[in-house]
Length: 394
Image 1 (cartoon, one colour):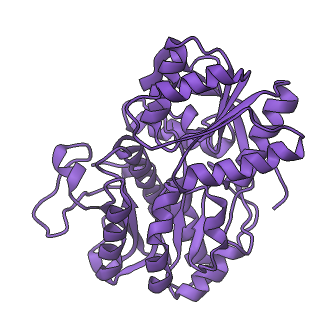
Image 2: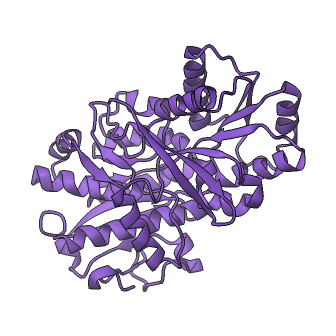
């Protein structure tokens, strides 16, 4: 596949049984490598676990595409330590056992100097013990605040954690929208419960106790009981932490069908193009607290323009995998080494590094970002419009 600026990107199967094109059925289940022109011996490799199958396959495709663009940008700028960059990926199947197996396969290769982990907090939790054993940097997107407080030296987050999203959701809903009867809806996985706990704390600081605190199981076929509970609670606002975009879309449609008009302020999944497409007009009138928006900053605008031109005018729902590649490549170049300890120190030393998700200023826990965007999803455009950015001290 021809890349921007003349860079050639090849997709190869693990056992060298031929090349396939991104997006084919074969590519959906086979490991792939994003490469430059250089021979294998001249490359530096990152490993990436990503959902190519399962409930997260659609956003996983977007994450993979963003990583592709980042590899091209790094290689066009001179590569890593003057060598071409390649990403070798494994399908995590959108499951915890799948992510553990995918990561173990990448580690077993023995040639990856760093890794891109999962956007799902529950999957990051599952792979964390193996990350500690591998003792190499893993950039990840899960937003459960506890993930960088487990004593694991090798986890580095490329999205803001939910202590910040909870602060923004609470402040915007109570002080901005002047709502006080809030129904808190959340997944019962690590992401959802982490967001729930953080939001309960932030609402408590504002003197607000939710009129409903309702969990749900991922991939639930029907949210009618949850929606009816919201209606019965008398809530004038909904604050949510949805893990999967398809669940978020089903919930949106059922709110509309059952006539629940409470103002909805949701975590990042509500603003995903995947959610907007699946929910249709039911998503209009809602708010999202999103780590990424195409209009939030110059880097996001530039990457989005390249993405749209490359991938059928689609708008990406996040830039964290793009940023993760750039941050990891920068750290290796700054360290002038592929030694894991030196890369780790270089990541933690990064300050004022502007990328698509915001400005990276890593703290000693491994969190690089400390703010969120407020956005509004629109069915007509299939996108979320940018309202404003709120950052907090690291």
